[in-house]
View 1 (tube, rainbow, N blue to C red):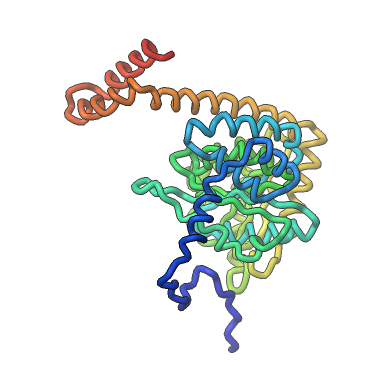
View 2 (cartoon, rainbow, N blue to C red; view 1 turned 60 degrees about the horizontal axis):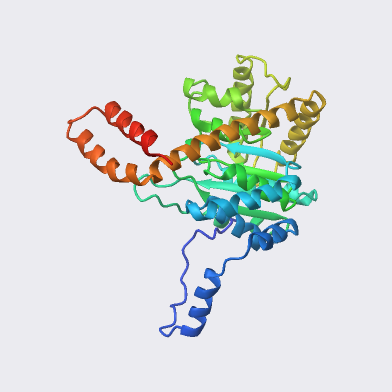
Length: 364
């Protein structure tokens, strides 16, 4: 039997070339200077509206920044882009690690660009709870899509945000839409009840599954399945095709146990292979049917309005938290309070209340 030709990934380690011992100091200095140049908000806005990817990336970096000095500029850019936004289809894609999200997104994204779509992929990488670092390797995984002129991949660190959705993903969507990307794919870290965060910023919520991953009716998955608009059984190729179809039938039965959706849409199940492309085109057909139904019955627009209100409140909560932790008096007292709680000298709840009371008295 012939061995199947395997696709070599850029993740494979190869023998490289040793770096030169002598570095051109002039070139290094020029690179450092160019990185320090800050383009004006107007230049970035004009660049985004003209489809300049470099300016889009710079603006997203500003939006994601935790530096308080960048907040005003980020808000200025977002407000200028708003009139040109809200013209895309936003698709959330989730699934357990190992289900093949990146491979699926690359195959699906290539299919969309072949239809003339402009696709932006906002891929959220999990942050380490210890070092706070992220690998941000999605561009490496999506080797073909990253070279597509009609695609843009932006990996971001999840940080400490609920559900692994980057803190500023909602604003990033606005910027990508203003740059004329008409299809936004948001890849999340994994599954769990906290995935409500991604559900609250997309039009269509897609759950990727694989066969043989355990009991399909586990209670922990109920919250995700209630939100999903389609369940795709990935890796339906080779010897796994039969198992994938059996898993699809199990999910079909499971979905009948859930109440009817407000949208009037009945969640769909299907199989696909990101390697052979089988079933990839059908995923987009399903999404188009969903869009036709929900735009006709007005649910699509009602949901967008509800999401805008939700993110207004979320932004207020985020800003209040930021103001609290950045307050000079709180910064001085917080470490003392932590030590007192650690030494059981004071209850965590009493310590928190005292800090809040101090903030209320001293806020400007």
